[in-house]
Length: 237
Ligand SMILES: Nc1ncnc2c1ncn2[C@@H]1O[C@H](COP(=O)(O)OP(=O)(O)O)[C@@H](O)[C@H]1O
Ligand SMILES: [Mg+2]
Image (cartoon, rainbow, N blue to C red):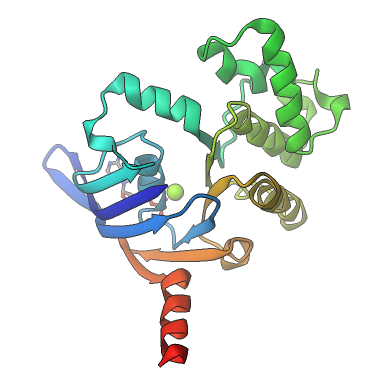
C-alpha cells in the first residue's frame, strides 16, 4: 500500500534550512498496524504529512497503492486524502460549536454525500469508534478527552478509509483513556482490516501496534519487521 524510498524533507525558512528527514525508506502492506516511534523532533509529523499527501518530500519517491504521488495534481491528491485516508490528530481539531454528529459528518459534506446518507454513515462511524449514542447531540465542551478523541476517530472513519494515520492520538489523554483509544485502533485493524499508522514518542503506546519503526534525527534506526525477517533468515541457515 505504502512504499517510500529515500525520502528527504528540508524545511527552508529564509536563510535557514533544516533537514527533518534524511533518507527514509520502508513499505507498509495493506492491513498492517504500524507504529512510527521516536523522540520529539525526530521527524514523525513531517513523515505523517508526507504519507497523508498533505505535504511533499524534497526528494525521494512515494508510491501509494502503486501510484507515484509526485505525479498527482492537487485535485487528485485531495481526492486520495478524501477517499483513502482518515486522519486523527493529537489536538483533535473538532469544531467547538458543532454537535458530535455534525463534526463526524463534516467530511461527507465536502465529499458531496447527500444529507440523508450523511447521518447514517456518521452513526456507523461513531459506533465503530465506540462512542455512546447519548453523546451524539452534544458539543465538544460537554465531552471528556477520551470521548472527544472517539469523535475524532469517528470523523476519520466516516469516509471509510483504508488507511488511518494517527499522530500522537493519545498525547492528551490519561493512561487509562489512552488504552481504550488504542484498543479501538486495534479493533479497527483486526476486525475491519484497516491499515493503521500510529505515531508516538512513547514505547508503551507503540507496543499496541504489530510492527514498530523507530525513527531518530530524520532516519529509520530500527524496524521490528526487518528484525523478524533477519531472525527467520538465521533459523533457515
Ligand atoms: N514548517 C517547519 N519549518 C521549519 N522546521 C520545521 C517545520 N516543521 C518541523 N520542523 C522541524 O523539523 C523537525 C522535525 O519536526 P516534526 O516532524 O514535527 O517532529 P516530531 O513530530 O517527531 O516531533 C523539528 O526539528 C522541527 O523543529
Ligand atoms: Mg509531531
